[in-house]
Image (cartoon, rainbow, N blue to C red; front, side, top):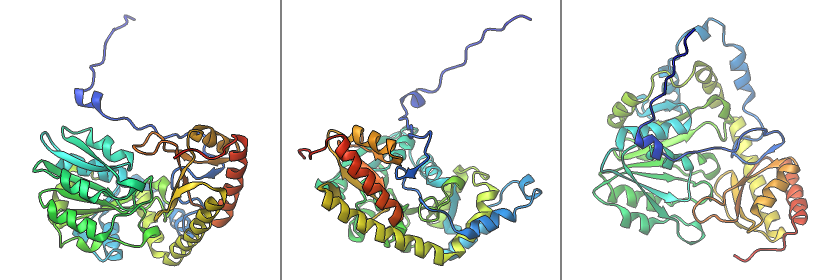
Amino acid sequence: MNRVKTRAPGPRDLIRRMKEYHPPLGDRSGLRLDFNENTVACSPRVLEALAQISRSELTMYPERDRVEHLVAEHLNLKPGQVLLTNGVDEAIHVLCQTYLGAGDEMLLPVPTYSMYGVYASATDAKLVEVPAESDFRFPQDRLLASITPATKVIAIANPNSPTGQAASRDAILKIVDEAPHAMILIDEAYFHFYGHTMLDLIGRAQNVIVARTFSKAYGLAALRLGLLAASEDSMHWLRRVISPYSVNSVALACLPAALADKAYIAAYVNEILLARAEFMAALEEMGLRYWPSEANFVLVYIGSLHAEFSRSMKNRGALVRDRSADPGCNGCVRITIGDRPQMQRAVQAMTESLREIEWTGDPQ
């Protein structure tokens, strides 16, 4: 048989220039304090819902409309204002594809979640990074000064990752008012640990989009579920871009059960808040600098031995996330908050790791 030699065509130049994201996956056994997931479990009602899925149901394409109605009711929104997505990653991707084109700009306070920049770089728009203020405070004045007629999207993670800092309601409202020609994305992935939302602006401010995830407090990261909330006019265009079947039927079957178990979510969030307070107190005792957090993680300054610290923690069965490559975060490690027993184990592992790497403090 003759061999046919072929050469595949290369990708578009835009894809060649696109930012890459390589999450440090692999063996994640042990104490998972690296991805800001729920480190305990989802509601037991989710497993009950899974057990009720029939074989015949798996033969059908998913339909998200009914569940979107339930989610809208849960959030006190209209069904036409809610769009379920395959995680918040797809939500960001859909937003960028809908609104960003040649000659447009996306404003992005940094450091922040990497995927905003990744998906913006997949368009012909210009990404404008706006550095945080000292102590990673929200750069309100810098952001306002960066708004131009070309500004099309402004992405604000609130609370922000990896810093745990939050922008005030007044600061966000000021940006919404000053950029009526831009879509303002408010990513509330960590809402449950913060308690403040801008969802009430949906339907009132036409340029506001709010994102939520079910991967954090709800513990459904494996099912990949997120949402966008926006005006019905904006939703018309977002729905044109999104794949009609991107949210699978298993996820759609489980979400109503997770939403219904309000007592479970309340108990889990309360436990995380207690563990966060205890952990930050332990950091004080260890003499480690950290940034008070409004999320389910804390950013800690280790200094020049950050890589050695992260490796030592892994050797002790505790995974943490080195964020030194993020703007302004050199020497910083982000540590997810689990429940109190888990965080007591984390403190013990940190104490041993700091001793092993002979950490004596680091100039800041």
